[in-house]
Image: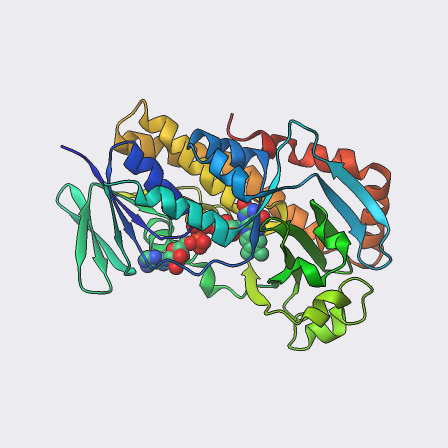
Length: 369
Ligand SMILES: Cc1cc2nc3c(=O)[nH]c(=O)nc-3n(C[C@H](O)[C@H](O)[C@H](O)COP(=O)(O)OP(=O)(O)OC[C@H]3O[C@@H](n4cnc5c(N)ncnc54)[C@H](O)[C@@H]3O)c2cc1C
């Protein structure tokens, strides 16, 4: 008999897992409301290798902007600290989240064995040999296994690890916006990641949507991001004032640094994506790691049954994620340095930044090999 999987969470991880599992022959229920997607994502070589093994790479390439380098400058005086160029063999992309979701939704619609249920899950329970998922709209769904792709504050994470990040105050936030490229200086439209390091804050931008839009993210402490933050930080800056003049909507996103959870599986529930490994976005790895979870699970299911494949994925990927998450946290701390430590950071980057960044990211970009 065909085995069934209930996937909770209709974000980028949930929908991608649904496509992989349906193609592998499982009956899939994808549970949760489709979120509104805005802003962009960078996709590094490891995430792209995972998307390639899931048969999604070619479509992603058609919609993404290939970024040629990561240019790190000082936010204060604009001097270049490091320029990490992506050589011919290293593909590194910028892509709109809405574009990525749209192409995933097209692949989803091609699978007959996926049912989408646009209602949040409110409770999980054992039901004989299977699991039962209770939905907010009163229905319930039985599944042999549940995959929790419902993010850092979801039901599944609580079920497996008892941990909910929303109970913690976020010390740092990202302000994210997408701005039309027409109204920004050409510098922002270059096919590169621009990282500007400031005093306890930093700014990242890169083009998305065929270079018609620029994804802009400003990260700083909760105190610095008071209601007039844009007047005090953006308005007087020679480059960032163009963002200020554009007056876009800024989405305020909390940045947590989570201690990685050791176990991603309990009873019939297995976590993937942010539900398993919420990390700050400073290495641009969150979604890419979710795609790695799914590709790794796909490879396990080619040689193991469903429960054994999920168990292996949960153990092996948790071991792989702990150092990645640690590095994301350290990177955030370095990006937030100020005063003398910040000046030392900038000097070091000026002397050997390219090599330092390449070495720091090498094992992460290599992926789950
Ligand atoms: C500022 C910022 C920049 C980033 N940049 C990058 C980048 O450049 N590259 C990169 O790879 N990653 C990046 N990330 C990380 C990336 O956005 C996340 O890792 C990724 O979106 C996680 O996807 P997910 O589907 O696992 O979780 P989520 O996006 O959190 O999706 C979970 C879904 O589950 C739903 N849900 C919750 N509870 C329930 C329930 N009870 N029932 C049903 N559904 C439920 C939610 O509504 C949501 O739709 C960035 C993150 C931030 C904040």
